[in-house]
Amino acid sequence: MSEQLRESGGAVPDQHSDGRETGAPVVELRDLAAVVGGRRVWSDVNLTVRAGEFVAVLGPNGAGKSTLLKAVLGLVPTAAGTASVLGTRPGRRNTRIGYLPQRRAFDPATRVRGVDIVRLGWDGDRWGVPLPAWVPGSRSRAAAQRVDEVVELVGASAYARRPIGQCSGGEQQRLLIAQALVRRPALLVLDEPLDSLDVTNQAAVSRLIRDVSHSENVAVLLVAHDVNPLMSYLDQVIYLARGGAVMGPPEQVITADTLSMLYGTPIDVLTDRTGRLVVVGQPDAPAEHRAPGSRA
Ligand SMILES: Nc1ncnc2c1ncn2[C@@H]1O[C@H](COP(=O)(O)OP(=O)(O)OP(=O)(O)O)[C@@H](O)[C@H]1O
Ligand SMILES: [Mg+2]
Image 1: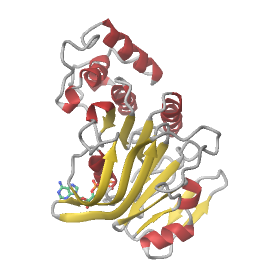
Image 2: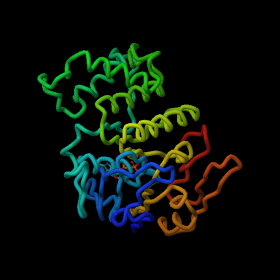
Image 3: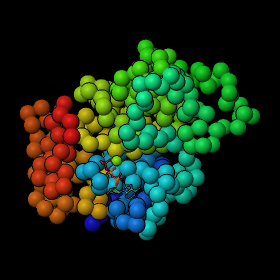
Image 4: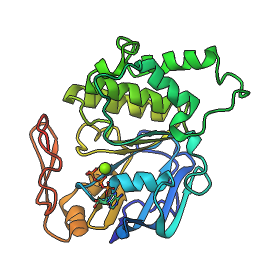
């Protein structure tokens, strides 16, 4: 099952609801299907992410959210459909993508400092394609300056020179977001970057990512388990479940009607007194959109 509430392949609105102009498409997936371990994880996925747009990938455990990010990065084979990322096929422009994989934790004994982890993003070692030494500034003070700049941007200056193994989970998270940002990517691909952050920091990091997206015209594709901290910052969401997907503005996708159609079973979307959305009734994801502070 696939549905696109905003038809991004057709006429494109000139502006977002906040008055920003929509940018050029950075990610375009059309009727895409992915196969992992010989099994089709999802089919008929349609997704457009434009420059300066902030899009969340939602859905229960195992729905294929990480697989979707890996498809965008060219790391998993696609079985049907077409995919274009930064104007070419996935995998070819990965040096212009800042990627934060899921579940990162450093051993407490790790001696490498936070700033050195951020610097790895500049050197490109994460992709196995270091910048050649002749690229101006690749080994220079410019790199150190940019590292300091992004460390400050994510609010990590106080601990960036400590061994990363001695930083808290949330501090490590901010340093890894800095690493993803250091090369001024055109596309940020973040797999559960709010994981291990407390509620205050979830809100702060959501806002930071939105600010970077808007001010630097970066397209952002971010996997989250709880949409609430992101809700006011998102342009679109794509909700994956039961091998299908629905994409559109969050207030149109996260509704009882849309999610019931996607899951093929009655789903309720409740709003609590503070305006938080609670999705209830998912057959295979009782812990989704859990209450703040509780862990799955
Ligand atoms: N290397 C692999 N071999 C076989 N199956 C895999 C492999 N990697 C992932 N899968 C399966 O593909 C499906 C989608 O996995 P994926 O990691 O994309 O889900 P997810 O939505 O990111 O879940 P989570 O919320 O738990 O991170 C799952 O059923 C998973 O078991
Ligand atoms: Mg995942």
